[in-house]
Each structure stands twice: as structure tokens, then as C-alpha cells.
Image (cartoon, rainbow, N blue to C red; front, side):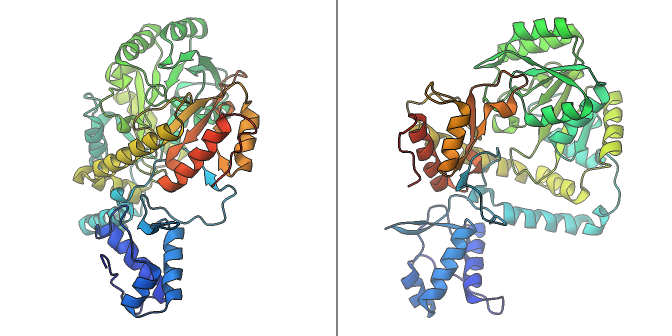
Length: 457
């Protein structure tokens, strides 16, 4: 056989030790993506154990996302790894949450363990269990600034604040820049987290017209003149939900409008690291931009580490104070892990693996949705699907749910009552490409119209 697991004694039931051996060999590279595993019977014979134990081990490994079973072909190392959900899912395949995929090449389990071991070796864990300076230490800020520097040459540690996630940045910028009743401009469809923060603070959001490239400069200029906004919030790269990405000329036009109007930009660059060749608007007007970059969409959501690049030193101090008042500080041990990854180059290795997996999923989607009008980016995590005339948004979503597929409708992102008529499909949320293919098949059938016979097969 090509692979025989190394089974250690005295570490729980035998079937779980086989699962642990699979996980270890995937992490070490001894088992690679798509590699075929021995049949149940062959492995049982080689190890001298009963067939039931191997069957149980393979079943548990499949639940944990380590392997995939293909009818008539056998068992294969999964394309991605994932943690088993705590309870039974309400839908068969949930493509409603916009999260990065977790390819085997990212090796997150192993890299987390190695990163924490390095942190422990350098300073010990206890060094990170007390209160820390809000906004990060000099070393943590320098690591963040170095990571941002290739895309924003003006990035400096003395203008950077480490936050526990981009949502905290958005809330705190609104908290410091606005008062109840003030206007903030944004795209006609926008990030639901901005809507929630604005509603909590009594800020009025005004949507600005978009096209397939993103916000329209002329519409933005008119809105600035009419509303005198305290800020403009934009997601100019891989816009959520439409995937629109501003080109260089339009980025310059938007920067000029914001500069002339005397307002500030809140640039949410959640997906920017997936397109490192695209220069943020912050690189054009750094003194007028609150620039937010987090790891949630480019590594993993539970890494609650985000970087705010403030317009100037005084604003940086104000944002530190706002952070202290609302959340005190980021989780020190988590920031230490990320800082170690930044300094060692591991963060970029993980992001490259996720970018590669995202590209593969986009190619898969393009094949299944051939002939369907879809907006996408080559390395993006989601699709925007404008609805064909035979479907209403509500009817399509309900139809898909009946067939085990969850997506998000445009109404979740609408700034006004005029919701964009489409759905967001999050490719990264699928456990692996096999599950994604299954979901895309359901979606493709459904988009042909009611009665097309959509089913999960």
C-alpha cells in the first residue's frame, strides 16, 4: 500500500488513533490532497484489525473533513480540512457565511501549534495574560505596518492600532467621528456590520449608486455636496456583496472627491490581501483615510486581529482611547500568535494557500454556472448572482432552502428600501470542493426557473 498509518499505543480507542494518524500525516505532508487511501479491507488486513474499526475510523475522519468518500472509487484525502460542527446543520450545505476556505496547504492546525510554541519559547504564555497597552505594543504595531507596507507605502507603526476585528474598527471610527443624526455615505449595498453599527449609534446611512465596477464618482460627488457627510465608508476591493472592484482611474476619482469635500474615507479592505496588486485608496489619500485590514476574510474569522491605519498621529491616539473605552484591548495571546506569523512569513504562506483555493473554487463555480449571469473575482470568496426574471428573491431563497442550500439575499445589504435584486453565494463556506460542486449543481438547476427539478444528488 502507498500509505500505512503509524498507530501509537495508549491514546484512546483504536479507531480514534487511526483518525489521529490521518490528521498527523495530512499536517506533515505525508498524505497530500486527493491521495487515495487504502480500502477498508486492505487497511484492516495490513494492520491486523477488524474491518469494523477501520470503517468507524474512516467515518470519523470524513466527519472531521479529513477525507472524502466517492461512491465506486474509494476514499481520498480531502481538499480542505474543517472542524466538525457542534450540532446537526439546519441545511445540508450553507453558503450564507462569507468565510475563507481552509485548504490542507494552509496547515492551520499545525501552524497554530508551531506559532504558539514559538511564542511560548520567546516569552512564555504568562507574559500575555495581563492587561496590555490598548492598540498593541511597538513590536505588534511594527509587524502590522510591515505587512501593510507593500500595498500602502505610507504605513507606519506610529499610525497603526491593533483592534479585535474590523467590526470593532468600524464601530469605533463612527463613535469618534459622528454624532446621532449625522450622515455617512456608503455604496447602495453595503456590509451589514456597518448597518448594525450605524443603527446603534444613530448614524444615518445614505447609499450611493453603483455599477459593475463599484461606486459611481459623479453620484458620490453629488451626495457629498448634498449631505455634507461626516465620513464615506467603502469596500472598494471585492465589494460585499457584489464583488465590484474599483479600477485605478476610479480610485483616483473617488480619492479626489473625498479630498475636495473635506470628509474622510473609511476604507474596509477586508479582501485586499487576496488581490495584493490592487492599491488601496488609502495609498492615495492617507491623511484622509481610516484604513481597516483584518485577517477574518484572508485567514480565519476567529483570529480577531485587525489593523487600523489612522490618518495621523492625533487620530491614532483618539482611536486607542476609543478602543480602551469599548473593548479595553485585543486578546494579547492571539495578537502574539499573529505577530509571530507576520514576522516569520507564515501569514503570507497561509494567505497564498487560501488565495489558491479560492481561485480553484471560482473556476469550479464558473463551470457549473456557465450561461448564468454572475459577478465574481478570480480569487474571491463569493459570487453575486443577479436574479433571472422568473424568480423573486424571496422565492428563490425559499426554494434553495427546501433543497438544502442556504444563501443570502440582497436585502441584507440594502441601505434603502430599494434592495439589490440578487443573492450572494459564499464559495468559501463549503467544507470542500465536493460539497461545493453539489451546492452549485442545485443552484444551477434552480436558476433555470421554477420547476427545473433542482435536487441534491
